[in-house]
Amino acid sequence: MTLNSTRDSPPPPYDEKNDRFAATNYGYISDKSDQVDIVISVDGKEKKDPPLKDESEVEVVNEQEDPWKITNVYVKVVPWSELSTCGKFKRVLWDYFGKLVVLVGLLYLFICSMDFLSNAFKLIGGRAAGSTFAESQVLSNPVAGLMIGILATVLLQSSSTTTSIVVSMVAAKIVPIRNAIPMVMGANIGTSVTNTLVSITQIANQNDFRRAFAGATVHDMFNWLTVIILLPIEALTGYLFHLSEEIKNSMHLQTNEGADQEYLKKLTKPFTHLIIQVDKKVIEQIAHGDPGAMNKSMIKHCCVKEEVDVLRWNTSENWNTSEHWNYSYTATESVCLEKCKYLFEGVANTWSDTTVGIVLLVIALVTLCVCLVLIVKTLHSLLKGKLSLWIKKFVNADFPGKLAYFTGYLAILVGTGLTFLVQSSSIFTSALTPLVGIGVISVDRMYPLTLGANIGTTTTSILAALAQSAEDIPLALQISLCHLFFNISGILLFFPIPYLRFPIRMAKALGNVTAEYRWFPIVYLLFGFFLLPGAIFGLSLVSWEVMAGVCSPIAFLLVVIVAINILQNKTPKCLPNILRTWAFLPEPLRSLKPIDRQIQKLKIFCSCCCKKNEDETESTKTDTDKAEVTKF
Image (cartoon, rainbow, N blue to C red; front, side, top):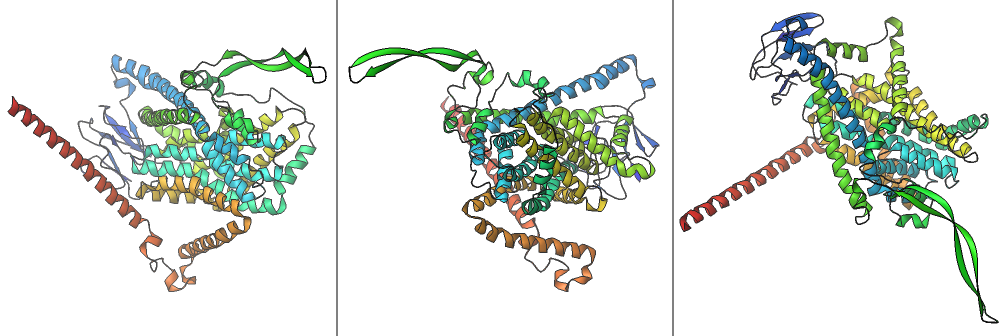
């Protein structure tokens, strides 16, 4: 590796359009606003550079470009001994403590914005999700149940809410456990849409975006591969059902009302409840088939209720004697003792749930994007000097010698524990995605952390099941155990053998595509989480035969394409000459370049139209000014 400090244009894949930061692809991003002496250190060797001035940049030239590699390049600031008293005071007060406080505050707002996003989607799509769950006759089709789980989780933006609804439906004996298992699998897939959305906020830098998108979609790839393998096995053998039933029958179950504890929400609720409060029980009532629930508002109006006995009078009439008499009876009613107070409470009675949800969605997305951008910038400025190198080494390091194999299992335990504390896999993985983008965490280390998050999120439904009534615990716990063993089965398939860790390679391939075509993530989100599940669910509503007739040829074609791709990379001589490459196909069938060219033309057309409108506006303004001068 060679190091150069020059003013010439940087070599690829560095983005010369980034006029504020240097060395953006591999190591710490140097903020040129910090006018300090800089030492570039690589593998313990240091090379001094003069102070940064104006547009000067520090460049790192690699002999082998690898955007996935976590390098030992870091930017070292002025040593403590060379700082003035004012400089030392500033470094301690701002660099060490101030930025850390800012980072914690931004993380708090980020988590709150995730809660706002979830509530917004509940208000917008909660009724649709509840109505979808109410289609109990469709749930006998496992593929339809899977798609319902995906769509409901995307609409509600919370796998915990989806699984809690499923658990309540199973406990109420509305849905059999075997029909509910595919819905839980779908919830696993749908929850990964959030961190994929978060990765788009790093679209400005090509390599940051590449890594962030790969770090987010490694969760998607694991969930899809696990479902593709385990759903047919479960449909044929019911192994999750039988395994969870055996464990449930061997346990002596008692209600534990204190089991369902909230940890992170105790910190965020005081703030989020000042903005909006949503009653998710309305969604459960819709899912249970309550006809009156469709007319209820999901916005909570009463925070404290009490059941009271009310004395009522009624009048009866004897039709034979035409006599009337009054009699009294006692009825139990729910009385509101304290109304909820929050920001949207004033408009909740006049605006519809959908209108409030749309406004809240805009607020949540703006807050989310601003927080993520500021978090990334704060991390860039905070991780200076050897601190950046130490963190990279600590997070991505392996155990020494033969114990290195077990490092990933420790990462799984860490992911499980942290997700249990925050009680949301979406929050945990979304918080890690920016760190993957800036190169602090590698995609290979993100993978076991994500697997741990998948296990950690199942503890929420298990604790919720243990808090049910004594008669509801067995069924509720069984579906929660199915969720747990589904994730454990996926880990046993795609983690112990390093060669079988396909989700990492698939995520990196998607990251490379994303780096080349910036529009690809939008298409991926729309197709993977909306169009595909919606189309398959629509076909399943017609009949099982129609869905199988349409999906089977497509699935067979995909299997053939994957097999040919593997043979092309591994043993191309086994294939006929025409199949050794895809050059015989028309370009639109083997490349995204034609679509990209059309999108680029559309962008140029839009920019030209905007420029034309600006010129016309400027010309009109000039003519008006001239007319006024002439008139004067």
